[in-house]
Image 1: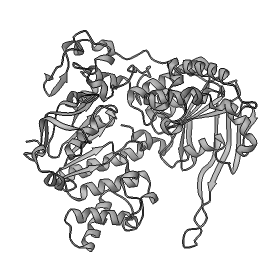
Image 2: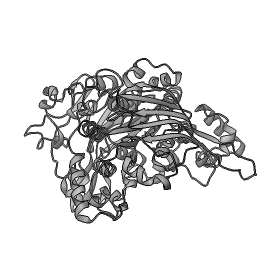
Image 3: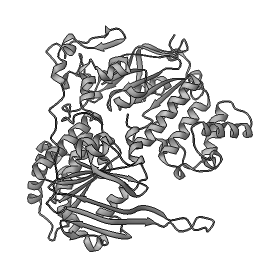
Image 4: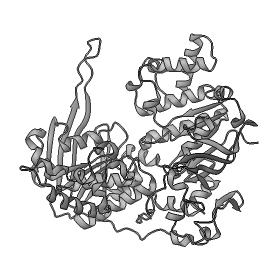
Length: 602
């Protein structure tokens, strides 16, 4: 008997006077003690499934067909008050963003107390003991000290563990975890997932794990359901689905993911992007058909059901989907670009250091200084991509800020193309702008929403004296859009009018405007869907081949670093503990920290 069962569920809304099935024919089951993954890109409908279970569909959305059964009771038939009473007690949730899910004005202890009181735990002392036990169960040190802290005084990983502790504290029958490891570094991600596995196994709680990371889900889940545009397109045992995907979309997800081992092949990136809600109404048949590399004329018209094609494996689609798997075969192996050993480095960092001193606390006690960067030395050759890898807090982003002049180093030298730019930004601004540029992590917050893209990508031309006139900027904007694979009509659009992947291309185009010698890319693909990530990574490889540009690529994703970078530097507690050719370092790591990072990769 299933703990949770969704049976042929449709969730419907209206847009432009047309009825749209946001979720269509969704069937899914979770057994007691079972961990089931729901995988797909942004817009696939994964989080909508979680909201459906919680009874928190957005305004204007309603269930038009099907049932959601929990412990043999249909949640959709329950009175709202009764259904709400299940939340936190019988059904608990682990949210995606720990820092924004906790109340910033209440201590962790106060929030735990409120949560346990709502679950019916009597007595403040008893609630405190239960909170301490819950924090101890997620292996957080000094639980009594943590209860007195506020969310901003904890790391992202600590906040996520606290939310997991809250979810399991009520001993629920079912937990829905919605992207609980997004944006966490690989070691913290591994710890959080080990923790979820341990607690779930000990309590026999059913767990629905919602994620865009197919490999992570396959490593930890017993079964997987792959979603695309509101439909489940494939389900089956996790290991079999990853090793032998049957639906073209599942195969595309696997082909777009770089690996940590084996041949490095050019990623097979899907064209375009997933349709928005308004586009669903124009897709009566297979919703993946417009992007599918093996579609035929019948696909767009034929609406098919999930069919068991081998025991335990269910696939939605026509026979052509499974017969033409060869069309999605891996690409040719990529040649590794070797740096010219005789050429002087384009970027040379020698003994770079930065210590932050934060004064005194509210009791007047002097706070201990934080050594963020400690004697970092690194060279990058012309046309070389070097990865800088480490967990959160290792000092990677501080190195980037020092290179760009956003922080002033306490010691060491920064030389770009033979020019020393170590001093304060005010003295070196003209040199830096011409020599080194940043590609920011989040293009949505990095791009001014009130400016058109043509002006955004040529923003650096405004600081010239005299400033460049618009005809010159327009010509440069057209050239930059061509280099980054963007349509020319993008020039007149605003950032909100293009997709997330296109916004990141705009971000890259803006960094290229001054024809810099070095780009610094800080986690630029960490928040992107796998197909968009593949497009951006392939674009960067093409740019390196065409322009011989150099890059410091900062990331916590070792698979991405292996795909993109010929050399890698491993950073821990402000120091580079190991560096060398990427394949050599990953195949035969020497430092214990490097070994720990590689062991944590799913």
